Length: 176
Image (cartoon, rainbow, N blue to C red; front, side):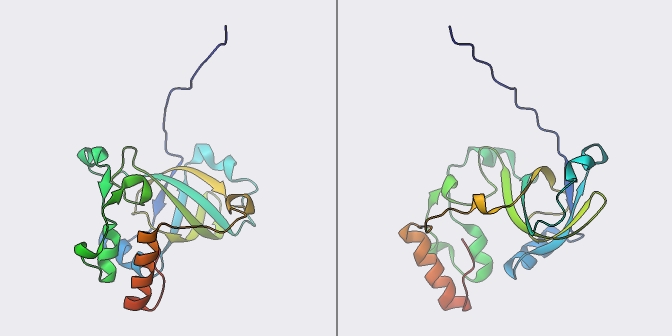
């Protein structure tokens, strides 16, 4: 008989995002290219940062602690972040939550790829955050070439259409 076991899900943040901005200021800064801030790693996890210096980018996994509990049942969304770029609700498609970066999801976990600017002790200075001040950080991983697929990335038609609209409206791609 095959023995099976599972590790129970236990989550303890390893640190917190520090940006010193209100949630609205973070949204505005994200619209303009991302937020510069810090990841403060808890003292008991600081040894885990050894060897991280010299990586240009990090993968930050965080818990959307401001996600509304009843929104965890939402399975269809419109990419509302695009509203701050001048899109209207009518222009946005209704898509499955797993095709989006919406914080309203069954498990409100967020992932960011950020540029590592520097490290001082257990403080990582980074650029490109789209997390709010105080967001719990669940994990940090060095971002390496292995995360980049070897083949070209494809998008569905609705995504390409929104990208084209963003170029017409803003003169640049914004990422959906």
